[in-house]
Image (cartoon, rainbow, N blue to C red; front, side, top):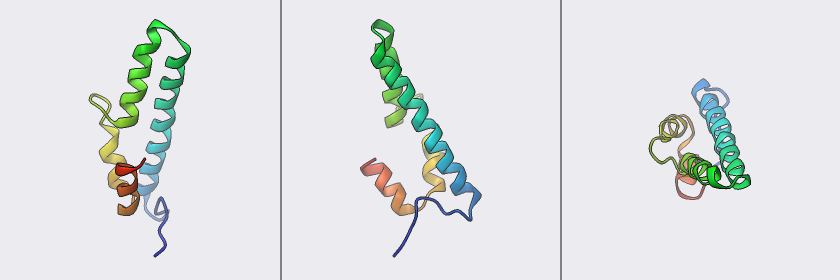
Length: 81
């Protein structure tokens, strides 16, 4: 059985992949900028971590991404990634 991260024939799958890529980069930027700062950095670290693990209030992007990708990839992202 061969499956890919996105089904390139479906626009919803392309949108989900783009959202995951952009928001992953966004959260990494917050996290890394928080590492570089001192007192304000603690807040930025928490924001970056909250995006990565989809904590409230940063959970709104997760259902959109998981809905658009194939089931095996959803299982991988929910358990490992």
